[in-house]
Length: 243
Ligand code: NAD
Image 1 (spheres, rainbow, N blue to C red):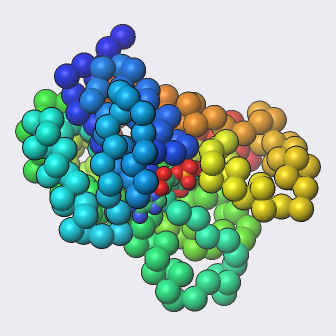
Image 2: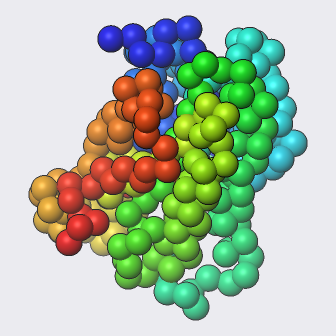
């Protein structure tokens, strides 16, 4: 099935983890898949362009480069994100601003730059990477959860604003996914193997979510297979959010 033949997709944070798996899946289904990343080191057939979603000029230049090089823009996957640990008092204003800037405003900047081009596409879709942290009430994740809660609401608002002009906006909400990000967290534990085993045991299906499984949900929401779906937050978490 070549859902994305002839289409151009950008994936922010597309050089690692969920973003990389998504860019690879979209490319395997026929898209020109462009990874916008701080470190855009990706292999063919992916295209890497350096962009910092916390810098509006960088985002505008990267989207302009995509359209100049490939002539169109059809799919935007707003995936770049950073984490934060701790309760509400654990991070100072600068840390709160930084995480909200990357995780929320980053999506705003990329969407703002992309919308004029998406309006010209017959198959336009935006997929935001949310998290079950948006509503699951996870301990020691106050700042990160607040940022993803904003992504949840932003997705609903964007869906309402743009569905009538043919741009569907949805989100995926992964549970704990096996990516370099989570690998770094596990590696910082005194016993990474024991920490991984404990983390897996906490998942309803007894293992971490794979980046490829999240990518599959993104591809579904970006494709005509979900042509009547807008404003949906699709959990990919082994059922964690329902517990
Ligand atoms: P990752 O660290 O493996 O990859 C993130 C990528 O984003 C990296 O390539 C990084 O360079 C890029 N990036 C970071 N800041 C950027 C910026 N300012 N501009 C451009 N690129 C930037 O992380 P991941 O685990 O694949 O997470 C991807 C997304 O999935 C994030 O939004 C994260 O919040 C979300 N998520 C992850 C999990 C998980 O368990 N891994 C769970 C739920 C949601």
